Image (cartoon, rainbow, N blue to C red; front, top):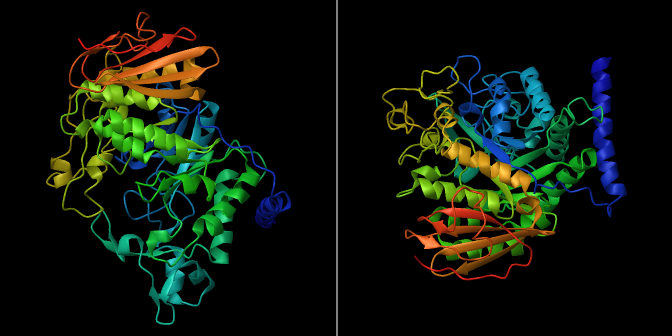
Length: 525
């Protein structure tokens, strides 16, 4: 009886969400405001092991909450948790439940409770455009291609039993363990799929379907999101026909939900995602690219382009790294000062800072050439360095295989100075620099919600002014290999980053300005 009661309650909630959206089309849900957030992006398998099996897990994340709070984190973004045969979990073998190597649903609920109790939101990464061999839909379709569950899949020739390719024209995925399994595409616009994903996402938003939201997620990251999936002309107008209706129904259950789209085309500024699909935020890819080059003119152009493309109430996540790109600390010729200035720009520019786990330590990693998906990106996703040695019980060394290229060429080494244990007590460490930036962002509303004006002065200085009410701050970055001096407003005051107006190569400074200070020019020294 209880089972049927839960099912009826779930059906009622879905109907209520759909009805609310239809009955009040002019009512705009309360949009989530990300300006106060600091997002921490966790590659779940590599973050922290709690039980000695070398797999990062949910209890490890729960145990890491004090560390996250010390870093000023207000939201965690977790890579997919659902069961999968690939180590990154992006191709599901079942959308329901938790990958057993990460823990149980009870572990998940305990993690959510503790995160929320400590004022930290949780965003889950989702990619349900594809499924892998072994998924219940796949199994049902192979047994009977006319079975109702087979309607969830996209068919090239259903009569002949031929499914469509997966992403990038793939029909098979090689697993880290060595086996190969199939992958195919989901029929997103089929009514069965739309109904399923509405129910599925509501289960994460309100797990008990009791109207209380403290046990649910605060948002989602939508991986590889496209209007025309994989540009194949097979599933088009998805923004209007699939994504926006889904968001509308979910927002009826929780108006504060955040939906962050990962643009499949990284050159896309994201305007259509924010308007036509009605996502809450996108990733600031153009700014990321310019920042990694430390190119002042490119950064200024990207800032202007990003601002013009972002409607009021929408947001851009600022980042230097994510799980798909090389670590910034492995960029050729990168200096420790550049790592600090990249962080200052992410925290000081208009937008929402997103930190990829280990970025705050200067963790290194670059993709290896010539390997398949199961291996080449492992260097970007190495175990988070809690301790100075690999032997520490918390290290999530799930990929440890001596003799394999990705192990023998790994970046992390014992006692290399790139760990929480080694940097916590060092006042000048990169980790403590990140902590200081988070404290400054929290202490100064202008850095979170203020207006932004950007200018260049002299041959090297990038100057960003943030203002809110009577509070004004100016972030100055010397984007050159030569020293420079800043003589503008605030130069006579204390640099909140601990330096001063004489800027070393690639150094940044942050000054608090008196109201209405006129701009002045840089002089070279």
